[in-house]
Image (cartoon, rainbow, N blue to C red):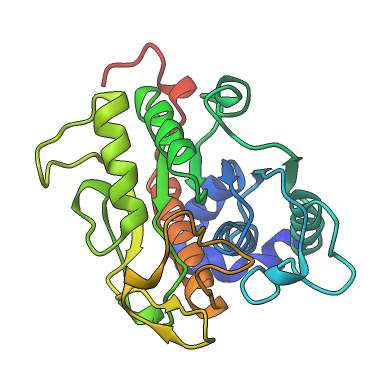
Length: 269
């Protein structure tokens, strides 16, 4: 009865069977930062029955501008633990697996298994993103990836397209290049990778040493890292919108009845 009350609005939107599919689904969110924390929040509020969270970082006070779990009292604690507690408060019936580790080529086999119904890639490392996408594609695990959400202020310029068809997104472009070079992905422009990617067409805004901002990268000196301490700025309106768009796409796939690879084994394609 409590679940029917809690997620009745989801059933009225996606149908009762759709809600049942969400409740039976297991989704992994890889990277619980400015994008992933909001994506995980959305999955929990849609009634997804099992969620695995992957991130090795702790909550930092500098995360306040963009991450849902960055609140007073959480600073210094593991992001996955704080997010897991929040999800359990949203839906006590949800099975949450917080994993304080990064998903890399070395840990992929242990963490990203064919028992998953879907994966949300919210990592900001090019190498890790490419490895995760290639791993999921080869095992027919549904994956939605995200481009760069920093340096932008306008959420209305966010789009979802195939990873091989994004533009104006440096992170997505670097991931494409790595997939082609290291994993044999097609070099044909516009050929579908069947990997939805959330990205923005907005021109990036760069911080300048004098405290102002500009839209030219030329001032960024060699060896300067665009990071939390002094790199791209970020704002919740954009990072959350990236996460919500990614969650929406994987929810659509789950409701449509996409099955995990382990359930498709031995069945004709």
